Image 1 (cartoon, one colour):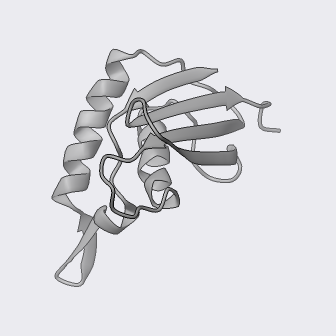
Image 2 (cartoon, rainbow, N blue to C red):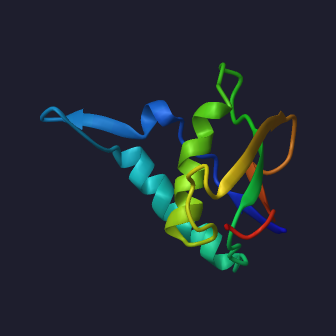
Length: 118
């Protein structure tokens, strides 16, 4: 198992902007990806090859309504970009669980190896 702590990821609704009829990464998402990448690298997580299960625990930073599933994409994209998992497609990520916690770090991700890809 590999466990990492990250800053709270942006909602998928805040990850992209439309500029000249094209979807581009928002400044907020680019800033989070940079910060989260630095935080990730300081933890020296072990890359996992093959199929994985990902469990995400989130702690809301405010009282406004939030959807946990909107936070998953940024996390999986970060794990793929930093080669912690091979890819975030269904071939490799076989299960994703996400839950809200009342207290703790903003975002804790546990990744478990399942089996090699055939």
